[in-house]
Image (cartoon, rainbow, N blue to C red; front, side, top):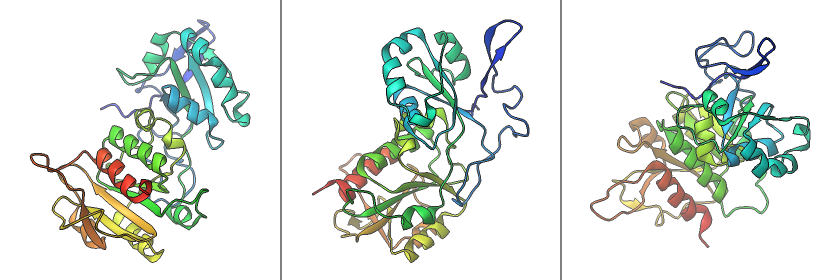
Amino acid sequence: MFNGRILGPTMSKRKGKLGFRGPGDAPARPGARPGARPRPAGRGGPRSGLQPLWLFGVHAVMAALANPNRRPERLLATPEAGQTWGQRLREERHPQHAGLSVQTVQRRDIDAVLPEGSVHQGLALFTAPLAQPALKAVFSAAPPEPAPRRRVVLLLDQVTDPHNVGAVLRSAAAFGALAVVALDKGAPEESGTLAKSASGALEAVPYISVVNLARSLDSLKEAGFWCLGLAGEAGQSLAESSPGAAVALVLGAEGSGLRRLTRERCDLLVKLPTRPPIDSLNVSNAAAIALYELLGRG
């Protein structure tokens, strides 16, 4: 299955044309291991085992270029995209990326380095992955300005679809959540598909992978967070739960829901009431509604 990580373009001196490495070709950098995983447990630091990746689409590329923590290497644009977005590409990037030139290519060249069917809008950026902060550093940091109603960390229990995770990140950014935490086993890595679904939010909200979700909940509890798990069979709704000033909200995959050990670590199980015949929501929809309840109302 395609993993969303195609290696970078190289210039062919012999042909004088742009040549693109495919998913089965040699690593882009010496010592890189194909299929390597990022460092686990939200320990902080760069995801040194993860290879550079392609981001694509206007919002994902623009947000990455505006992020000083990015390390972009190549920026590709079709002639049409360059004409439409060229001024914004120059003006909205962070000053430290000012030296990155736009390489004009044909649409088929961008198609060749992305997953089949990717809606790239004529823009693609080859970049190193973002560094992963430590979870403790996220919830120990001073609250952003203006300060939100409460501090909220989202935790995803066995949510594996990159489109869903990207949509959750987008809602987290929209409502001001501190971070999105995912279980390392099965969680999608940073990828162009995830970043496109996040519509720029990957650059704004820390996306942290952890080996043990239960231990992360214990750490959050020790820091004063009230741990709530969303479960359809819960007797109390999220609106009725009267959560405190710091909330760790746990969401499970649609269908399987929260695992037993995760449930046991939660202080309270809550639900988002629905009307028959619908008894559950997609995890990204549930996250958006829950975040509005916790951070957006009032």
